[in-house]
Each structure stands twice: as C-alpha cells, then as structure tokens.
Amino acid sequence: MNTSIDLRSDTVTRPTAAMRAAMAAAPVGDDVFGDDPSVNALEARMAALAGKEAALLLPTGTQSNLVALLSHCQRGDEYIVGQHYHTYFYEAGGAAVLGSIQPQPLPVQADGTLALADIEAAIKADDVHFARSRLLALENTHAGRVMPASYTGQVRALADRRGLKVHLDGARLFNAAVASGSNLAELAAAADSVSLCCSKGLGAPLGSVLVGSQAFIREARRWRKMVGGGMRQAGIIAAAIDHALDHHVERLAEDHANAARLHNGVRELPGITGCVVNTNMVYIELASAERGLALQAQLKAAGILIPAGKKIRLVTHLDVSAAAIDRVIEAMADALG
Image (cartoon, rainbow, N blue to C red; front, side, top):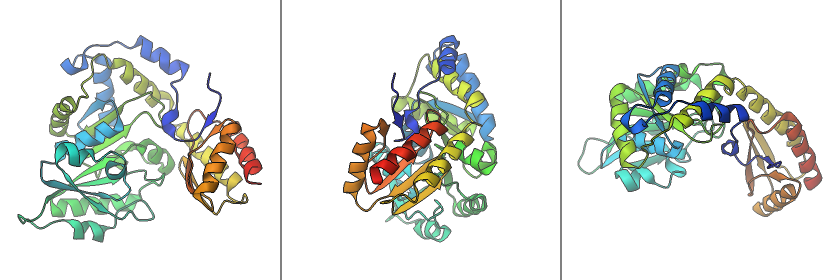
C-alpha cells in the first residue's frame, strides 16, 4: 500500500473501498449502443445538475474538451482562449492538429478571467483573410481561482452580441461550487457546453462528463466515436462517478481547508519568497528552480511527493488528511530551515 503523501495533483486520488464496491455492483450494458443503464442514469443526473439538456460520458477531460471544440467549430474556425488555460496550453494542440481549429490565445488576468476588451479585440471580421471566430473557451477554476460571478453574465452578453458560442472547461467546477456557495447550474449557466472532470476532486479513477444542448451532445457523441472514445461496459465508470456525486462533493470543503492550513504553515518559512492559496491549490515560490529541485528530493526522502521548479503547485485532495498536512509543514520546515 502506498503510504506517501502525494501533493502533485488531485488526479492521483485512488478510489475508496466504497467506490470500488459501487463499481463492482453496477448494472452495465454496451454504451455505444446506448443501453448501459448506469451510464444513461449518470448522464441524465449530470445534465440536470448542470442545468443543461443532455450529457455525454467520456474517458478523460482532455478528450471531453477536444470533443467540445470539434463539435462547436469547423476546419478554419477559431477559438479564443486563455494563454494558460488547459484547452490551449496542456492538451497537446489537439484542436489544431485534429480539428484544424485555430487557437487565438489571450493573456489571463489575475482573477483567472480574460479581459472583455481583449476578447472583443480578438474577434475577427468576416473577411476571407481571417479564420472565423466561432468559440470562446473559458476555465473555472483556473489555478484554483473561482471565476467571479459578475464576469459570467458579462462574457455571455459579449458572446451573444458577437455571435460566439462559449465552452467552459469546468474540470474543477465542483470545487468552484463548494467554495462560492453556488450550485453547478448557476456556474454553468453562461456556457453553451461544460466539461466536468470526475477524476480530480471527485476521486473517480477516470471519466469526464460533457454537458450541453441535445443537438450539441448528438454532435459530440459522433466526435467521441471518431476520436476513439466509444466505450462498452462503461457503467463501472459511471457508478464510480455516481458514488462520488453522493459522497465526495461536499467534502471538497475539507480539501480547501487543508490547502489553507498548508498555506498558513509554510508561507513564512525561510526560502519561501511567495505563497498563495486558492481552493485546493497552494502555490509556493522559491529563489530558484534548483532550490525547488532540492526541496523535491528532500521531501521525497520523507515520503512526500511534490513537483519541482521555482514555482511549485501543491494540491490537496481526498487522500490527504489534516494530519498529513501537518506532516508536510514539519518536513518543509526541516528542509528549508
């Protein structure tokens, strides 16, 4: 049994015993034929939670975002996106490579949004020289920051006025809901489509759910097949996610509290030149990347896994307790002291 404390990401969570039991007991069918009852029930449940008409289960968040972009855009179209949003920066250029969709990256503001003026300026004229601006891709949370509630209505109004669709990468939208006290439908209302990852804070071993209109999901289902995402007895995945919706959403507040506990414990340690916390993420900054590499090695020797670098992201999740956070604080104090 792995007893290390892993703060590299909330993707490292392992399914609980109760989740495994739910997976083992799940009624299943062939999802490509549309007859897996567990998948069908989950898709209906997630669509209702997000306030959308329909939903589609996909293996990964990257594929969910890719399918969304392919469903919204044609070859030669453009999507406007944050320079450091996942759909542009961390998904291997899939939209451009597989969909011939041109990205137009914009600077991300301190609060995780894109400036409305920047979006407006990036929208191309209807001219044969330009790619066709079709889609705005947003992200909530971004670097753990919850998108301001006042922003979403403004960006929806801009998109409607300029004829854009809006896709939201909501990989951690449940974190945003718990942190803000909003429900999922409120946070998803301004978007035409939302990708909801279930293998991060929710703790399922895999799976993301894409939500949107009936017509959009019909198109997305075709694209899922084309990019190799058709699954068969996927009810075992749906059961894991369904269990997480029942048991792992409200407890995200514990992850946020543990991140705050970690932030408070390490922010004034010698060698820490910067430290911020947002939801379940703590970012620490050191004097150099070399110092970060040394810290990574020192903590690994103590059974604690973190990334390396000058700026390091530490992520709390359901496999990290408050007692584990105290152990991390003590180990970091020893390493930096």
